[in-house]
Image 1: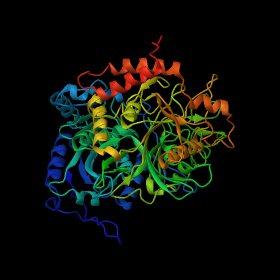
Image 2: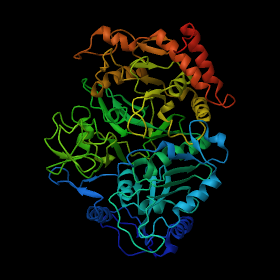
Image 3: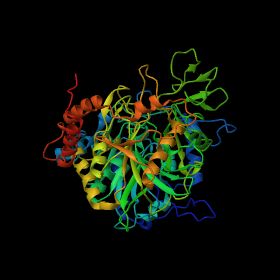
Length: 627
């Protein structure tokens, strides 16, 4: 096995040299020791330290095209862009195979799958033993957040998937600059990944590789006490890009709890009013519920501008002035393609003009990609996400519902000029949203931080294709973090309460939004997409203090006429239906919330949230038990 040391740091004038450094030149010997240990365990043919250069990207993508992992798209339509087709058995997050391996099972809590860390390490070590035989082991130093930033964190991922390397190049600040930042004593998260398909068997015989190798046995494991990630068997998305949900949420949420900050499944936008006043909003939505659409909002109302800071994850920490500051720890977007098009999200459509990796979408005959929602009329013929001939008469989807695009954030035309600020941006308001066909109004404002935490803790949403399992079921998804909190959810609620105490008068106001109310025929009442700017306008006017709200048990609701619906096909009666308090529905909701709260350990559950529920129930005049 050849062990290759990292290449020297590139200058602005040239690509990194191919000349290797000696192992002694590594800034942190803990990293080299760990890499050597993993190499002995997994037995790759060679170890390559990733430098993050353009030349490296070019080599990797050419290699994957030759191997059949990638299809190069027509450069006239999508320059420097590629299509990947995963195995149909490896298409989404595998939440049932995701584990929190805390020392104490109670620290994982009822919403996580727990495994004993010592037993899990033994089982994983057996799986990883020889798992990279015949393959290249890539070492990816990366930074979540701007390198050297006050809110940023470092990690090192090891993987045997070149698809993961290419994707991490778009999603993180990775390579030699990140490695140089991990000096002795600098904390870093080790993240080990393998697709689990060695190319050389125990008998020494080499086998043919597949275009998308994966193992039927899958584990995505997190060790919160040691800040480690081990992922085996999947090559897809958050299962394999370990800087994303695994580090940026599950492990980072534990770090945030211990260090007094928040790691959240939230977008961040910069909103500028017609009066040129600037506000930054953070918003939590479950996957495939409109996060990217809001992050790249193109307002339809005059004078308003929305710019993108991040579309998926926010790390928020009190700044020197006591105000909550946030960064987007990612460098790119890993967006859901189906449903994204010029009519729904023109900014995203413009972002993915090139330099993009598409996964599990259709291939047009002219060499460009297509998916449902990209154009009003489908192509007459295409090749679907599984490589089969497809026409509109096929009766099947051309793209997988969780088909994705991966692209660098700085390619987004709406990217804010402060998106990469090492100090982060001040958060002026926090929004919680979900996919609720009834009950939850279009917008409401919490009367206090604690009521806002109650809003986040009681979020529920219809399930989507972003995770394996049945789509369309209503499940509680507190703070849109159900699959992502790396410790006991009751302790997580308590941490949010404590953050409010720490922020005190600097705590930002909290709002609830719901774009997905439907009528009796199942049609959406609110037009959504770019028209959501009208709700953002109401929120900003509330922040400015220039607009009143109706006080109700579920928070402040818009007064009649305060939401601008000019030009919409929406009458006042329909608007009232989605902005009023439905007392009967909320009495049933309160009963369901009480049952949900009872699923948590009473000793760990915050009394503040119990009091909020008691207050809500009392103000509603009691509860109506669900059928």
